[in-house]
Each structure stands twice: as C-alpha cells, then as structure tokens.
Image (cartoon, rainbow, N blue to C red; front, side, top):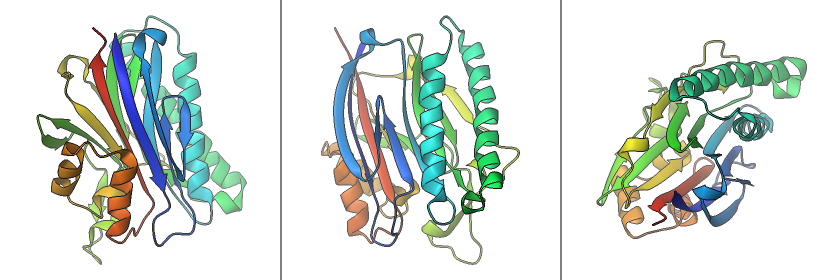
Length: 251
C-alpha cells in the first residue's frame, strides 16, 4: 500500500479568455483553481490522476476536456475487479474508441462544438498496479534523484510556418474529427522508486519554460501552482495546467 501526496493547478494564462484545460486530481476536477490532497491506496482499489488540454473554437475545448475526464473517472470506477494487465490495457483501448466517438458525435450534433477535441495524459491505478496513458502532446515527467525525464512521447509536429514551440501541430487526440486516435500505455509498477515525483502538464507549461527550469523548480519542491505561475511569468501564451504527485510506501 502507498500514500499519494498530490498538488494540482489549472490557470487561464495571459492571452486566452477562457480555460480549456482540466485536471482530474483523484476525486476532484480542477479548472482555474489550485488543489492539494493526500490519500492512501489501501482505501481504494482504483483511481485516475489525469490532465486534458482541450482544443476547439469558442468554449468547445473546455467541453471536450471535461467530458473526457468525467467519462474516464466513471469508466475506471465502473471496471470489473480482477482484470489482468493485458485485459486492463484492452479495456483502455476500447474506452478510447468510445470517448473518441462521443466527442466527435457531439461536435457533429452541435455546430458550436464542431471540431472540438482534447489531449489526455494520466496515471491510472488498478488492482495494485500503476499505468500511464497518453494521447496528444500533454506530458508526463518523472523526477528521480534530482533528474527530470519525460516519460511520454509528444504526438505533435512543429508547424513549418512557425517554429516556435507553442505553434506545434497535434497529430493525435480525442475528438477533433480524428477517426484513428490511439493511446500510449505503459505499466510502471515495477519501476516506481520511493523518492520519485511525477508531473503531468499541458503544453502551456513546457512551451513556456524549459525542462531544465521545470527540473529546478521541482527540485525546490515547488507546488503545481508555482509551476503554473512560472509559465505565466514567461508570457502565458496558453492555458497552463500541472499536477505533481509522489507515491510513498506506507510502511
């Protein structure tokens, strides 16, 4: 059994008028707010810590991110007990097909939601095992012995018309008319070490400050909200959301 200590924050930034990001921080949805909690895994047999970066015109992106995280929380909570890692993986793939269809269908049914979509990155706990998932260009990092490592791979390309980081093109996501979405999946249970810290973030963080700067802030034990403030201080071109959590042995 383990103790999870978590902080999450989601901020609108300096340029946008609304926040299309959202964080699922165990049992709390976080948007335009900051949140901290801790809990024991012995009190639950499954949970999700996840982040979604919505995209689309008007308020459509925030609809897609909220719908996706709400659906994921319900799906994980409703899973049958006793699935093997392979069976769990297959169910996550089936869930992706389902939520992708839901988001695309909503966009077709309501013109104000047309082309809405979202990224998704998260860590899932089920049957005493930890898995990370990723669809899009939001990121999962691990801080181990002071060194920051990106665990996920960005599903994006640099826009040849503009080489600035914040102008990259997302090549895989949930919704946005995408019919062939895929999700990266990794079992990290055996790799977890007691002093590790994990960071989920939207590209509003890593587009504004370097991995070296993120590493420095995390080594100072900065909160999720402090990371968001650092990105905003550098211009905050996008919404910025982060979630930092540690997995400690309960002893």
